[in-house]
Image 1 (cartoon, helix red, strand yellow):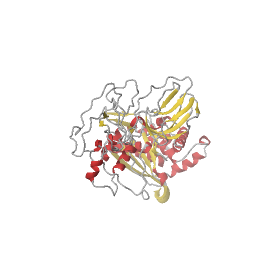
Image 2 (tube, rainbow, N blue to C red):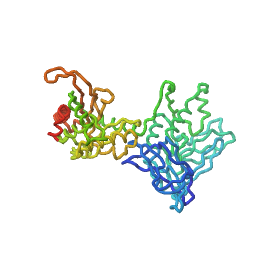
Image 3 (cartoon, rainbow, N blue to C red):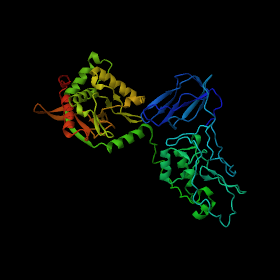
Image 4 (cartoon, rainbow, N blue to C red):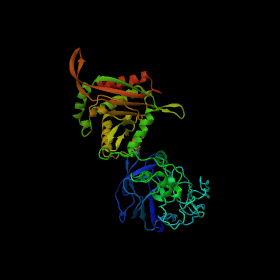
Length: 494
């Protein structure tokens, strides 16, 4: 990390661009070191667990340093760019850093137990800045007698709970980079610690590559790969005798599962995909889902869609079956308001919503997102068409904001655009109902006592059975179907 000595250099930290977000991935830098930036200028695009967001710089100056390359996931609150600002506020105080140990070099005694109140200590989730000297438990086997073929070694200082490399005439193996002084254990985020535990990796043996000596997921995988013995490796006992003292007696890391890169592709789960997966798992195993189906003749609705396309009031607006289905659902919610609710587990309450934020599931290159139309219940049909068009266009461009995906009350997912007849949708977390629309197809249908080709589709409504019973769910689904079969009910029921 660059040491700040110039009072005109300022750091721009990764902001929380949503509610409660803890990290974001840097997708693209729009500036480079040496570029001049102005207050409000967009310097990079980041992807959070909810959306892609452009970040503006809050002051004028010249870019001094980009702290992280594109594709890096950075914690909220971490400085990502430094800018030289003329007459700026005083910069952060110099940070105490440690030089990494080199192979064959003896470690210098460190005052690891002394606190450093003047220097800024790196802070991770679950770690505070140490305000007093830390105490460590003695390492197991630290007082073990030397082997018969080894001369007794002089007492060595400890670095972060590890013995420093002994001074010896023979070259010593490369020592891991010690974590910053004053810490009880190596710096790593909880997911990285879990990964290390699952792979059997001792974090004290891992060489950190992140800023401020933070161990990353890549560091853990590198340690595992380095620990996998080559086919020509000697037997385990001699290899143990040659291992550094800090690594003896520890369990061997589990080998990494090999795969054929020509036959498989591995894609890291992060950003929107990671958030969606967690939300779907949480929803599926928290809310008891019930799904009901109905097949309906929507021929009259399709005729109305064509008529609205010719209406001057809808000129320039997006008019399609989804528009009328959305309006039908809004009318059904108005007739059955108890469906528009959520379950408050903490307070053991059912929260009835007197507004409808209508979510529309959208497939984007970054994964499935569900932005919603705020106060959709209060919109006229032309206003609803305009909002739907803006929602879809923004989602396709990957510019949906986190705020647009918060506060939904009921959702529509249109699987019919993929030629699918229907599905059993999973509830969007915090909502009580979701309507799936199947493909609209010409099918033989009994109409006025005769079998005729009609436009037919299948609707599926999933709901949370904790607060929506079968009667209420059935009424809502039946109302939507009735409106789509006879669109004039939009006038009589609205």
